[in-house]
Length: 283
Length: 223
Image 1 (tube, chains in turn cyan, brown):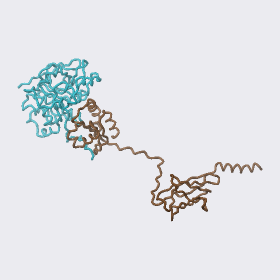
Image 2 (cartoon, each protein chain N blue to C red; image 1 turned 180 degrees about the vertical axis):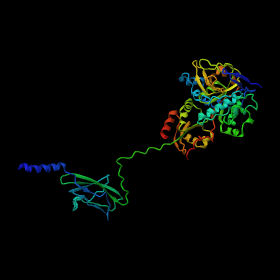
Image 3 (tube, rainbow over the protein chains, first blue to last red; image 1 turned 90 degrees about the vertical axis):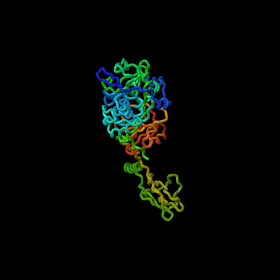
Image 4 (cartoon, each protein chain N blue to C red; image 1 turned 135 degrees about the horizontal axis):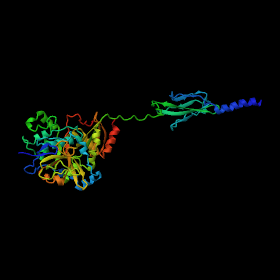
């Protein structure tokens, strides 16, 4: 199956590999069910953001900038792999683990069924907790098939896992998750307007069934009271604003959320072999 | 003639005004022998009076009953073991006084410990070279916006330069295995533990109430 492609103003061509599943995936724990007591209304989120005068809640665009954090999937349909690997890498660092650039290609290899025909968002939710993702220095961007990945890299996956993922099916859940500091994987429908932005830095892309998997890791309040979500993409730092753009639920996500299982990554496991192992409490 | 008589008189008066106190030599301790503590002070005091200190009522034998009123005689038969302190107050012919303290030691009383005139300040607490700050959130409870903001404060990234940190949920395996959850339960969630990285000693333990509290704790216990 040929994936759609998109060519950026800079001339880079990317394959849009986030596939809507045949039916809406079920069987996942939802954020609202798991964190019912945490759920915020959109007005509560707006109220929390109001004092920030349009600035984001956590400054993640500034903190997670540059090629270290903004990934580049290049010409494979591996967006889903890069979205989840990028979020896992960032969540680990937020928790205090040393930063490790985790492989989008390795994550994709676990979801693509042996062909470069894209993958499904809900599979990313499964593999990040069940299997983990190997470091990129073990699995570079172009090793997207299982047979290309070493046994050592496959064994290394267990050191880098998500801990607790929850599905997000509404703007309330997405806004709550991001406002409470979680990082999320979502689907957008990339079109010719994706990399172009309005005066508020919001993407000019439209809605659709969704064809591209990306991250959402921060939130801000636009002048008209709309919530905007910071979207780190995996098309390199030359795209849009340093590789990021702003999205709004109504303009970009209200349709894609119906076809793809967005999810929040709440925490990660520790890597017991890194140089930063916490000390047990002295007896 | 008068002039010559006046000078010695004046000298005597002046001597009275500027006379030195008597010499009074008294041993620091007097130990009773065969039921009596006896002591004869040395020096040129013409009279010596003994005053019981510390409120005890073990009074010496009246000095005017003694051949030498300057002597100290104390019957100690039946007296409870202890240190009984006295002040010997000696007077000179011209009325100047000297005071010397001493003790009668009855039985196996421990020696007096003289109060340190300049008490040494407590030694500065030893600070940890490197601390590990652990935060444990209750896995079953709601995270608040305040907690989220505290845990995402830029302080944590800055802490990494010299120290280290980790954020856990209470059902995370390392949090359970390393004893963090047990410590956290003592103060309530979300809990902050500041550990000495060298040996895991818990230097501070408190409930998270903003990142300022974490900064303060680290500054107090770490180099």
